[in-house]
Length: 501
Image (cartoon, rainbow, N blue to C red):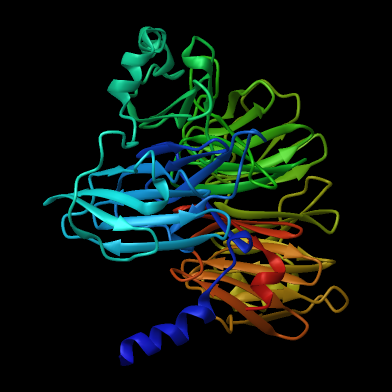
């Protein structure tokens, strides 16, 4: 009883509304599908995806943060009475009502391997096939009632083999559909058909969902999310964000109703890991394991321009400034020839400001003016020991420069040019990234993210694993949202919801 009371007290404090915190990860592996007249439900490892069929758009995913089962989903069946879906998992059963965004669930030893619903009396409940045979769960109940098999007219989930047998045309095109630009092959993992039309949906183990209209030859791919679990970098787009992942680039619309992917291939990009991304003049400059590439997001093509170990990018007149382990390199917008390797101190971070660039290196902070003189160390930095250690991130709040070492923060008074150094008053672990907003600075680290109001000296933090799934790799402020790139995907947060916690 004491444990239950404690949970009831703690959980509401940490509770988020679904729209205030959304996790977008690799949802390309579809474990189970279920279709209703209006909605398509897709169960993945970390989220329930819901596709609005009449509107042709995705709703917000329902993730493990929102109550989605952490156990493996084996099977799904749309409720024929409500806008809801039943799930059979390795731990038991779960039901999600999309109208009121509510989960109900119950454990069953050995889990649930199949589901069925009486076609003539769907309001009565759901049949569950367990390790001990079929049982019946009345609607509204939490415990099933003894051994009871489904009737002959029961509606059950559709398996891929049966679905392919219904549509020989789909089966004939299977090899073409399940091969990606890199010539990697996939398989169908699940299937669903609509009760109102002859439409087929197939889940795959890496390509998302394939939709066939009228069981015929017309098909389209429905996918939401990333094609890889790790998000390294973020860059703004006109109506969303670009995400650099460990398997190419992904675009997410601001409202998360659509996504698309740019991957390596004969006609695509030539790298795998997009570790830093800078949007400039309609192009994407990407730091990868290959070096620096310039990518045209419209065509999805890109060429490697600089082969080196790169850590930072910053906009420059008619090009970009690149920070490498060998120093600084300038790449013009129109360059097609690889420049010579730099010869200098390893660069970790860059910031365009003060008619030049602040340069964070392994040896501390320096400044590079636009007249292309070598970076110099300002006098006041020479007398600030903290700023002579590795500078992992730089930011700008108005005309105030902000710098981060792995464990300290510093800011420069724009009038006096004096630097103030402090340790964060919120434990976000080893510092990795900074992002500025009009009234403060967002600080990201291994253990969370904090909002720092420099004038007041206050910090407001959200932490791993309660609020965020993993360590922070990048931050992007795009009102009203804060986007966080983590090792487990991208989290879109409503900024005001974070500050009010």
